[in-house]
Image 1 (tube, chains in turn brown, green):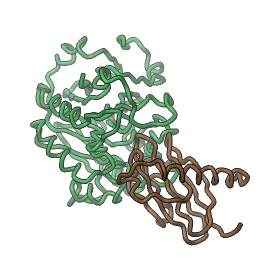
Image 2 (cartoon, chains in turn blue, orange):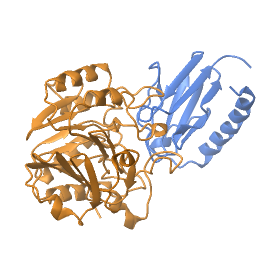
Image 3 (cartoon, chains in turn orange, brown):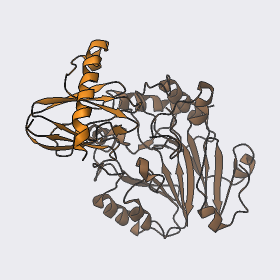
Length: 119
Length: 310
């Protein structure tokens, strides 16, 4: 939609993710931190509604709301459990394609990950 | 809130009030009035009541958020509040979100604790929190085993026809609460043989009327369900989901949403998003509560009272 923004946002997010790894306290929700892009869930919205990544990228969602949310593929490719406050969910996208997802608790929340090879 | 008995019907239909205080609404001969609890209680009790029942909603067992650090404590206070109702309610209905995020063991905790009300029978409908993890398998096995359909139900009590609808089992991306064609067909058949003079009470989790679509506070095919009920002289719709009291009247149909026992939510549009709302600790219990509904035969009246936990 706004391809110009994506690379910029991606670099910011990787930076945030790396900083998060250094600063995050250990705990169940962060037991397996991932280095890929992070999508912040806030005010009943996915912070990056459409994210483009390379195959093999692990995407991590972090819930900052007081409500639990899910990250659920509309095509049943992936299905998170309930992600409670400050918890994370990660999924590694291996095959190119467009992956739409939503929150099964709040289905007005929708997002998309586009996986494609390229520079 | 002042007596609204003088408001004309058209004016009332345009009115959609919500409030943090307990109100009593009564309908008699098409004229609706409301008054604060306590002011008109004697009048409300003047008619001999055949029976009353209680509603509890959005108990969210397992909630540990900042909006209520003792959600189990307020749930137990709600149980005690229902136990203290006099006369004793004939039964209890739970309008969903029994659990918070379907946490393990939460259904057991809820149903065990509700025995503390002293009421033998509880009728449940699920909220989205009760079914989203497994598509409703645990809920349906526990609360709807042996019944046809996917958890919907009806029963008759004291001359009133009760219908429990399920509008959280077909959440889709971008979607809203939904009943689905199978349930709508069942509902149409369920009420087709009833006399139009039969009072009907419908209960479901997500509001069956349009409260606030921007937050998903609506059932997308709710209007079809209501179309089957329009011919009845007295229809009372009891919902949960939005954790606050709202009322609306459309023809002979009266809509009521209930408070939660766990945490309040913002008024529609009053925050960037719905969700647990933090309030000063001394205000919290005033925004949580239960409901008592009383049916008086021959009066065409169901009285709805919403005591808070304050």
